[in-house]
Amino acid sequence: MRPRSVMEALRLPPVRFLTSWWPWRSLWYLTTGALFGILAGSVLLGLLLAGAVLSLMIVGLALFLAAALSGIVVARVERRRLRIVEDIRLTDPHRAPERRGLRAWVRTRLSEPATWRELGYTMLMTTALCWLDGMVVGVWTWGVTALVCGPLYIHDSPLSLTLTGSVFGLALGVVLLYPMSAWAAARAAIAQAVLGPRMETEARLTEVSRSRARLVDAFEVERRRIERDLHDGAQQRLLALSMQLGLARLELPPDSPGAEPVARAHDLAKEALAELRELIRGVHPKILADRGLHAALREVADRAPLPVDVDAALPQRLPGGVEACAYFVVVEALANVAKHSGATRARVVASASGGRLTVQVRDDGRGGADPGRGTGLSGLADRVAAAGGTVALASPVGGPTVVHVELPCGS
Image (tube, rainbow, N blue to C red):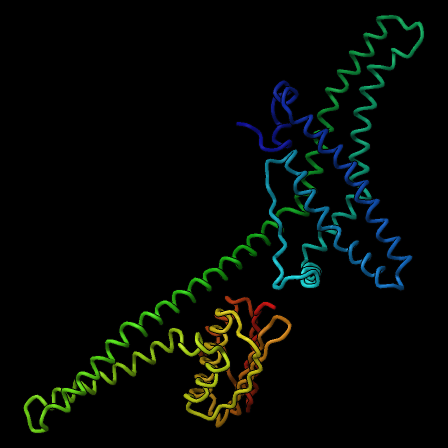
């Protein structure tokens, strides 16, 4: 079986190992590591010195910030270099910023643990690892070159001494390929330990979060399609049926045998139409799609069984998934207020700023809400988490109960 790393190649029989490309890949890996480490260390030292000199100016702070983020570039290069001695591809663990622009990118990177691990690896590489790489490469090249070519510079050296030195130098070079490749394997293991497993896990978690967001978006699109089909199809036909039954009811004399069945059918059609409208509103309210979150919240407040004040500062439309999540959060929260809190009044406050939508539902009830008692708060939290938001609940005994939700909504 073909080895997938220099560590596996070291376990091969000597002939197979020495005639493969792995020793020379190890030499190239260590050589580039030494050169890149020295270059990265020089750039990092230059940034720190320049930042210290200009520390009283904004430029100095920017240089310090660049030094702190330099590990991202170094780690990206190191992941690519690792392919020289490892048939492995490490993914980038950094998540995409929620908004565009340099400020959002910097804020996101500074908040990620991966950034600081990469900076730590950069410091280790520039202060120790690259110099060890250079020493190993230097010992191998100097030892082989000195023994092979050294006798040529000795005047009047016998031919036998020259040939013996050259043969011994070549043999030593072959033998030293083993410790050199072993150090390359150890060096790659260090890089993979810092930049690898945890970052692979973070990358998988990042991909899970992204796939969950895609599923939420797809589910929201499907709900809107179902709402549109019900509204434009079944509801319109049921409305036409109700009108036809109403007309037939008017045409029949009150004492005719068919008057009572037609009247009953008309009432049932009206009840089914009302239930269908309520179902459509639960799937995806048309007012939310047509007029936005502000108008939809006011409609929810009007339909609530208790007085609800709405204070929504939303100057523009938000992404459809965000509006739908916020809408159903408010619907669920007000349903809990009506069923469990004993409140006489509630208040809904919504505002959007800094790329985040904040929604707060407050009531004057008795408090003591517990998500573990199946009051719908767990499902509410799951819905918000799927949209990348957070939920905070404050419900002391005696009230009030406050549900605070924040959702990312872009710039």
